[in-house]
Length: 291
Image (cartoon, rainbow, N blue to C red):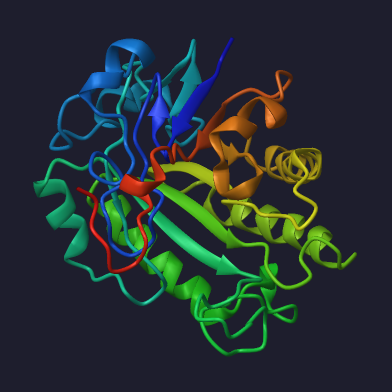
């Protein structure tokens, strides 16, 4: 069975990816599997990011851009070596800087998570979803239904990361406003992902596609989330059959929802979950401090 699982946006049996979005580490310290969990979850650890992981497989990949893949419960590099993805989230658009890539590599990173806010509330209580109030990149009149400035900013960050030999996760966050009930939005969401898959299918170091960060349908239905994933995966795989896909359950990647969104017929998929236990410690009230 080819299955990877992320916990707290951390890959169990695999890799680590952070769930916070504002230039926070995507590994230990922000919800990653720590050493005490590694024996239980068989976390595979690869070395630092100084070497070019594509160099060793150049002769094998004359017809395709090398990609990560899920094999036997591990995420592996193009040459088949297990890899623990360690890195950073670069935050909302326009917050990243060109020097971040080199700085991340110097810290031992091999991975970066780049969010694209699409049909998204701006996080301040003011609803956006295409009205131009904040970070939302939804533009139904633009190619790919993505605001050109937002796509250009994402392309720039992808280039910075790729040039530094950092594996890239393009992660879409959104699902706000009437995303789950407006009949036109989900087909447009699929269309947007088809555009992204075509746009990046030949991009070096395109590591993963996170289809929808922390989904939270009003119905609270994992079936609804799983059905959405199936539609998007079908569209993406028709264009890019190689790049691994990351998905997670409803209620913001709640770990207890993993089983409900598992699709054994889908391959090259990494499942993600947030492991928020002991809420007084990991989700304490604002302004307080855990003892």
